[in-house]
Image (cartoon, rainbow, N blue to C red; front, side):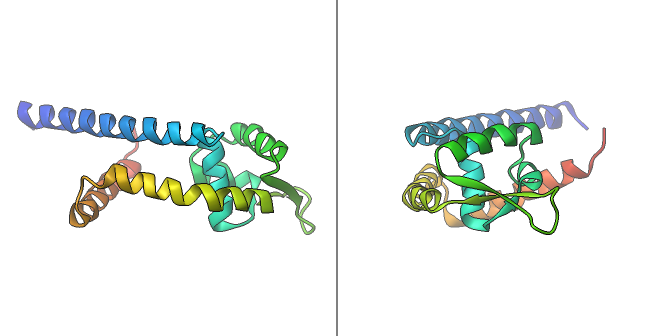
Length: 148
């Protein structure tokens, strides 16, 4: 491993970090303009697209610590966007389920979010997006397999 290879890896890390920060800042602003934080939006988006989910599994699906899920679900429940539903077969399991109000909200907001992301990423061609997806997936999976 040469010094140039190490510098190149550091540069890649910096470029990835800056791109991630730029995308997050603009999407977080979009969420705020729609009265949500990124975590609340992620929970609603999961329920909107995947349906009822056990509370215990939401954190893993949206990459959030389980302790924060209760707080987020409480906030969304107070706003009328979701309900907690007990599992009749197993009292230990509680589901989060999107309400009609939550569905209506997401039906209005999600297409704007999709369009916003498309505009942010439109600097890349379709082929470049495919290549970026492939390379970033390769990178992420290789790191996931490493243990420190």
